[in-house]
Image 1 (cartoon, rainbow, N blue to C red):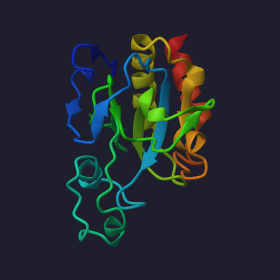
Image 2 (image 1 turned 90 degrees about the horizontal axis):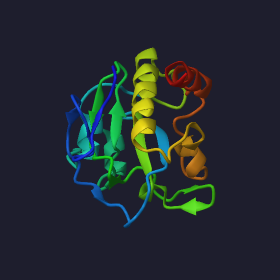
Image 3 (image 1 turned 135 degrees about the horizontal axis):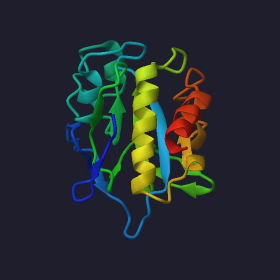
Image 4 (image 1 turned 120 degrees about the vertical axis):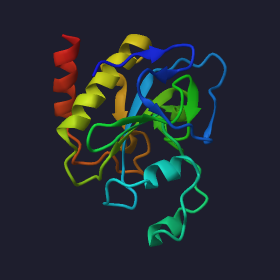
Length: 188
């Protein structure tokens, strides 16, 4: 799939948009210049189902699974989710700030949410991500590189790299070399 962004709305065209309330404005005059790749499964280690969407829209029932009680009241979001089958869902327009990185730093610059785009892959640190996810991720990144020139391939990082004391995703199962190969084939 070749992605396109509606610059007026900050949304991908022809992609399901499920608005998250966990969003606010980026600081004035902030240039978007970083992509942060995450991994998520809800509950941990389980795929499919409505729980990721419920988390990002503050509708997660804490009694639906024992893990959910431990994150009750958590307010998080992401710009994009790529499910195991390659389905892409947008939760936050790109020009707005999603709450995906938390306390974070990239190249001594703190508050990565201010200047980054968050992309969640449905997965775990230890289970391989799917070929469909890598293909969609590479297509999406190609689109983002076209639309946000301050983002370069060197400015694509993992959640674990910007918050190493707190986070481990996308984890050792994520094949950075595979992503870079996919990107190289698209970027020429």
